[in-house]
Length: 468
Image (cartoon, rainbow, N blue to C red):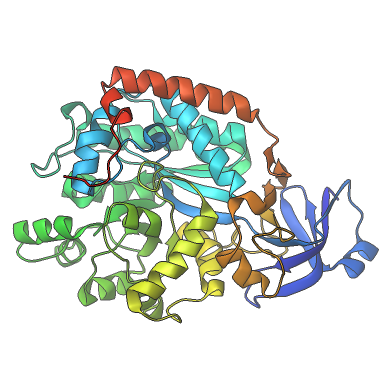
């Protein structure tokens, strides 16, 4: 045996939703082989490494289904803007100047923050390609730091006048497909099947119908998934309806018979959804990545999560990019998910803490087509497990552990993170790399990017109490 975790409060999120006091888990290689009471498990199994989880919650690793890790470099530079100002005024112009080292160190930094907040699996969406080959750096970072990562690679092949990308970022449709296929062939399944490549369409206004269908067809061909930003803002949906006979983007794709929606697709944001949109999502089994902190940051609106759940739509959680959140904190994300739905509906029972934990674990795994491998603590599944210290001032005294993980816990309470059977975080510290090296290099690359992109003025904004 490799690892024995004992004496913990184990929350399995398995079909029986077991909560085992004084529980134990046995890990052999990268798989879970046994779960039960500590006394029973210790009679049957020995281990090379024993982790004492006394006063700790033990649960499946948290799953983040959406971020843009290159945006680590842009934290705080686009505060207090709407999406349709934020992207063309800050993200787009900075993206033109990205280099390999920028993408590598930003991906490492974002992955470090995710790991330290209990996230064992993340899906990154990389789309700005001033030159080809930058996305490889994200995958290198995933492998190096030890996180389980999906790189959903997108691109822009059209320019809308109301959301104009810099010209260098608009690429030929077939070139985008060719680049993603190259990445799939090079990286898919590397690091003991820990990293994967998906197709990551940008958004309806950034992609032609031809690109959407080619991504769909190639995703099926190579057995991978897709993601796309859908119905993020009211302005976006209204503009699309004006140009497409009153149809929303989801209705447009469905009614026009464009190959896109389906169980292979994760729709990101999905905020401005009418009843017909929701029916289409449910009928096609299209999944959702809910990004509440980003939606609040950019004042995009509130995703109708309770209605989606009632209709059987799979909903998962995404932190979104570090320039529109502005962090990668999974515990903040869970609490925000619960509180936003309660205040938006004026109903404190709109969503429970237990359901939020499901969104962050097993439902995230379903969205990523990995529910047979991760998302719960069950024999045979991959050993992606986190330990959260309950003996802390912000949590104690312990009464209802599941509730306190959502409403009380913070990233600072994450003690141990195990990914694919390997301890990546121990006592809150990274074991696979030197944190100080990552933070030093990301600062240096960011300083150079800000200067190169002529964005120093965004760093030097005066004290603002009211936006004019």
